[in-house]
Image 1 (tube, rainbow, N blue to C red):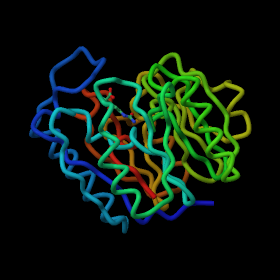
Image 2 (cartoon, protein in one colour):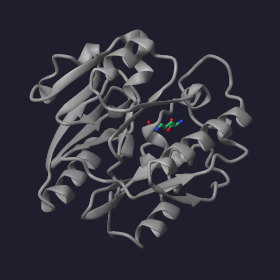
Image 3 (cartoon, protein in one colour):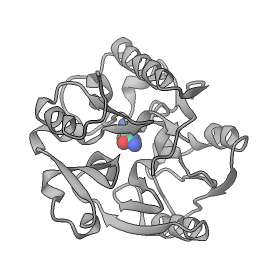
Image 4 (cartoon, rainbow, N blue to C red):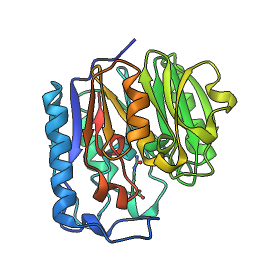
Length: 255
Ligand code: CIR
């Protein structure tokens, strides 16, 4: 069943937003265009009846606009993360302060590390990526917390991408969008699947929100496959965000 999203925390990209962590070796992101793409994203969410909560940029934290990594929010609880990249540790503080207005707060503690990009919630089932950012302690702590709220957690080794949600996302109705190389992974055997060709890997990071699918522009093969869902489809430019290893889910915390 779809969870209606009422709020989204977003954080405007600051003047240093193009200087964050990235594994992309191509061109350096253009700051102005990156900020425009972020603004268009915010507008798209607002048009889907989501109330935006804007946090100020965090000086010294160029990746802070990828807010998704700093908290995992369910209808019952907000779990503040301990980001896996040392450079990003501290971004979570302003997010925690804001979320305490909405939810009971829990937190991932040392030696645990966890990025929200490694957490995919599908109804009462939570998939937790064990990645370069999320360690076993972090995954175990989140499992313990969410089990108390009646969620069932599955750990998923992520060896070939930054985060779990770089490679798989929920489309609702028991359907997942996932990278074709993961098609036979046992963790996802109970779901219907739409596969993304590795040549369009970035399109895996499609956001299902209030009945709509929001996908990155420029991925025609994946777009054609997503059209078969019958769900209304929006596309957004993400070229500069992608240069920083980010995608559409990373830019907000939705609840
Ligand atoms: C980082 O490397 O942490 C950022 N440049 C990108 C984070 C993307 N976040 C996400 O996929 N949830």
